[in-house]
Length: 145
Image (cartoon, rainbow, N blue to C red; front, top):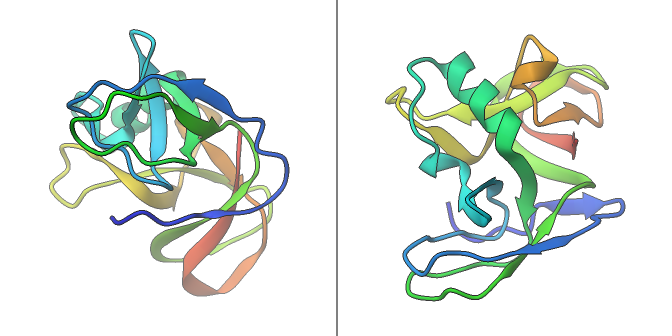
């Protein structure tokens, strides 16, 4: 994905986290923290299943990148820890409050950085649907939590 400002409204309550020089983070990426540094969702080690990957990400989730960090740059970036963001998704219907998590790549070995999916339990979620989606569409508003 390219840099996409996904924030739509609400307080973002940003934090600043360092990024390793070899790590690439784009605006709009789901970000987790490991050893004090920010990493995109796709960098999380594969836990074997989509649900296991989503649960592992949920436990380390920080927020959504509001700044980019290209390869070779090790400056801290701003990460929103709250707010409503518009993400891509597979065609789906959703009600306000439905649990939303980071989707997995088609290969089944890593999470995406900017695509979401409905999930079954809170331990898999990174947010909740913020606006009813019906009929099915490929974009949804998600309040990150």
